[in-house]
Image (cartoon, rainbow, N blue to C red; front, side):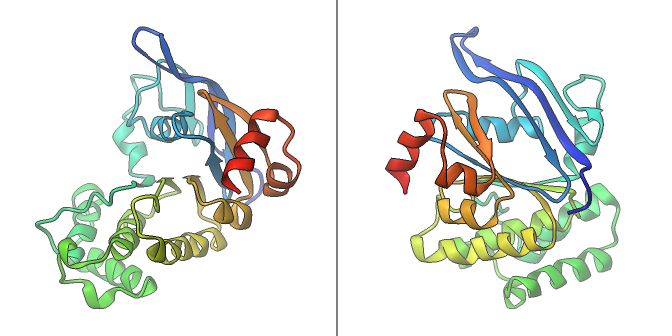
Length: 248
């Protein structure tokens, strides 16, 4: 942990649809400190993914503020693209470019957005591929990889931009059960290296083992948050107790 420095601060975050008839997010307040691993759990439709996508403005909030490293990114004068470069995002479906090799998928953003040379970008990409045991697939195309391999590539592709925070939106839910472990293993390694992470997941074992803090959401609100110990062994709200009874 690098002290108690706040990286992301969320104040009264709201996201409404249908002229306010649907409150996907209904006043979320939280703070994410550098080096924290915050795991967001809750039933389907509770607003978890909407919350995550608001953090880098893939969803534009209806109200409230998000401060990233002290800058209000919800202010229309803020250039969100500059801040997005500092936030890695991994989706449920890998979002790799099918017509490009794995290596090309990884070096395109650092070259275009950060002005890295092809040699620099390639060197970093290869060292990240080695790290996840996939350097031999650098010249393969996404269609030649398994789901677990694609998701590991999606993670290291995001890391090529040297982000300050990684956002994971249900990164294992589209995978076959036997591939889930290999992706979670990479995420555990990142946590051990003090990468700041916000993870939306149904993997309760991961939440229990890796999270520094667990946030439970239901109906667009954060119902409870605390350490994994507090959330899983001593849930206070009835809503959380009901949820855990179904998933554990």
